[in-house]
Length: 99
Image (cartoon, rainbow, N blue to C red; front, side):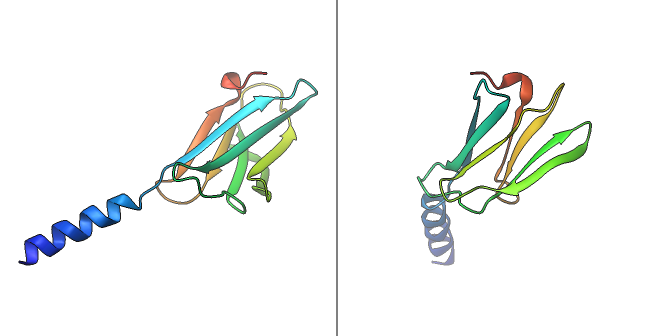
């Protein structure tokens, strides 16, 4: 009986799991916009966002009310990071961000 209850509780909790998602694009005006969210459709408003270059944080904020962030495009290599906590982090290299 305990095994059945444990199995059912695991299956139910899996139904409510969601994955972090983010896409970024170059605005062609010297800025980058990133949009974040979750696979279940929930908002990313207030989720931590940062940009790292050479292992240092060069931009640090939170997603706005539209689950977006716009920042000045850094020169060289950088990484945009959507950080909704352990297991919910998305990283996009600057070289992968296009118009």
